[in-house]
Length: 504
Image 1 (spheres, rainbow, N blue to C red):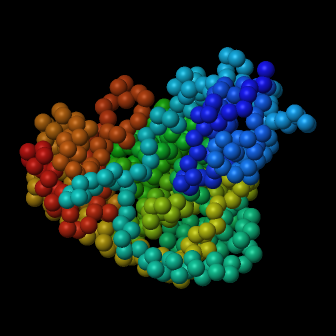
Image 2 (image 1 turned 120 degrees about the vertical axis):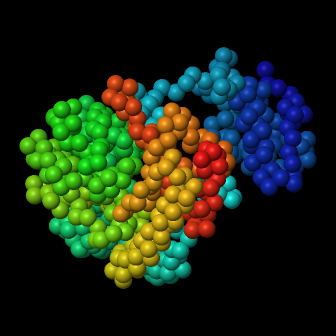
Image 3 (image 1 turned 180 degrees about the vertical axis):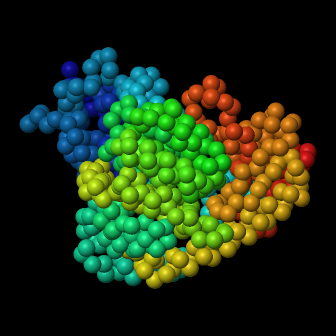
């Protein structure tokens, strides 16, 4: 039987004329919730709009607006000459499910099995917070305080005040052609890489480059060499793509190619950082480079070269890239602009072998259509005008000075218990735990003690994510000191605080 009038009081409808939300939206929400919650049942008749307006003390137009919305969404139906009723065919309002299920009672979502790799992989580059008085020595961060943002904003405004149609529409899955051409010119001059603009693909960073590479070159179950210890983000991207990780040890000459051959000669891809390995900072020897390329040629495999910080070399010219030695088109080269300029830029580049250039562009068009165009014209101008080179020269001097400040402070306050040695490149140093008591504690425990006094360092063992670490030797022990983003004046106090925390 239809319910009598007096619906407003029956359902305890409360409207607030002072609330920012319009009254018709408030009434709509109240009636909708009454239907979903079962207080208004299918077939119930609503009072006339004028009667409900009088009862609630609002205008008839307000009621009509709420009714119209509920009618359009199928919660109410009109019956000519009879009135407005709650719809009788709402599929989710059976007697057993007339009330919406609570989230905490819902069944857990069914995710794909391989989603566990993504959900449990180490997180990326969120910078931890240090105390207001002591520095964050987290590795991998750069100093953006002196970046020419005024110049950047002028170039951005100049580009987008009256942008040409080519920039507005974009459409090239490889990225903005002038930026790709500028990167190709830069790599030929600075890294000895013979490439054309057509070989360059703009990406958001190393993870996207790895993801695209895996989509093109890996079948599920294919083996991939990764460095041990190494950058965790690469392994997670490979695992999520169905690749089987083969953790190949790194020694003083870089990736141990002979060990890789013993472990998985039939691997499909090798991921390496030959110019400055992360996190150990070693440089792959020429002998190892040639051996790696010989394996790739004979096995018809591929090498993904991660050249993440080659610009920050403090002694001599940057080393030649592994790609510059590749005569067989087996090396996929990846670099980043985010570490050169500022982290949130999220722009990098992939240089494909000529035979794969079109395949990479086609894959990009399917997965991501094209990279965002907002900053690409500005970056092209940064290359062309020399602004990028000038900024890198400034930062190279600053980072070299900060490394020296860190070395002097460590020698003074750590003595021979935590040993830091100079590095000709990079943005961090690895402190070796020379004291036996410190080694017994383990670098993770030591990092926790240091964090307790407000200083952030990273344990080296965190970068050993091999599944077989128990059977293939203990994880490397040490502390990683990122110095690039630490102001000069805070380096010494931070080192002193660490020494005090560890009673050195």
